[in-house]
Image (cartoon, rainbow, N blue to C red; front, side, top):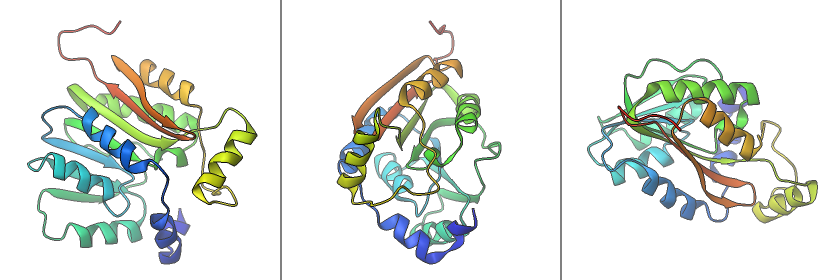
Length: 210
């Protein structure tokens, strides 16, 4: 993960934009529980998603996790006056740190950097960290059905080559892994080419997973 300590690399990555991302982010916010007191942002970067969730839930305590010191330094500048935000250096290719019970776990354009097996174990760790009725919302890149459709996506986002750190996973397989992790409700609520919004809800206490 040394490249994520390179300021140029970080600046280039943060400057990327994907069509329909803002729409997907608005749907991500709508998928959160009505009441969010504590939430975790995986791969927080400069804190873009942390900020969006905090605006939607001003009283919520947020934890931002990232493996890049350079990314976290930018996030610290953005949240210097916000005592409700905690930022942690952690590579979530490794087991998640103890965060206490969470009402929501969010992530944007980060988990696709993990190998598939780690995605699968991460989903189970997220399920364990969520409180009853808690929600995991993941806005991420997924594989295309064909190389032609993949080329179409790359053209749409202005990328002549694949990012060497990408480890895109199959959408349907990831939805299945979320079911296997114990989530009661699993859905893809938005998809545009390779950009997908996955929503998974932990069963409320007293209910059973069907």
